[in-house]
Amino acid sequence: MTLPAPDALFAALEGTWPALSHKSVAGWTIRDGAGGGKRVSAATTADEGASIAKAESAMRALSQAPLFMLRADQSVLHDRLAACGYRCVDPSVIYAAPVAAIAQEPPAISLYPVWPPLAIMRSIWADGGIGPARAQVMARVRGPKAGLIARSQDRAAGAAFCAVHGDIAMVHAVEVSPALRRKGVARNIVQGAAFWAQAQGAHWLALAVTEANQPARALYDALGMQVVAQYSYRQKGD
Image (cartoon, rainbow, N blue to C red; front, top):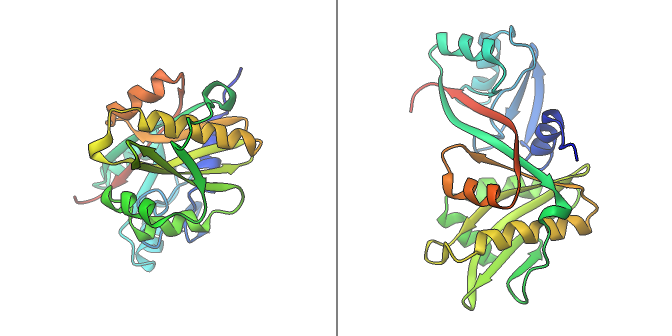
């Protein structure tokens, strides 16, 4: 079975984790992230010759430090930004797999889809650095979506967010409480997300993760997910 094309995955990534607003400036898509992190704040373009200066000005007008998100194959733009002093950060990959290959009904009382998120989910996310601004990103999503609360050893153990764009379900904000890691909680979340997504009519399950997150990548590899696309950011300073 042919996996979704990178263009479809990037569209689903944006559709399920949207910026507050976006506009086109000189060939760039400029996003107002409202403090919701790199993915919703970075400028993107398909034109590797687009004016970097105009993108910088547009981002500064939003009181955002210039930040660019590039696909791995945009080598010309990578080189141009490097020459302007932008360093590469957070190289990431997008995994995908057929929903039917991942979906598994969660064991009793181990995982629940809910919306809006429960207070305990917000607490778990906050402990992992996923604060109110990122919660607002989830709230902006239109279409099928759910927060996932996982339980282990008779207590809340993890949380995640899943939303559907077209026929692709994207999993975001997977966070497991440190004391309950390595107990199958993350696996249950991903398989449960696929089970929920299957009920929404999605054909594919996908997620993005940094290349450096080897524990998470080991799980996704073990589940049979495949890397379909790669991207990274370019920024100045720390």
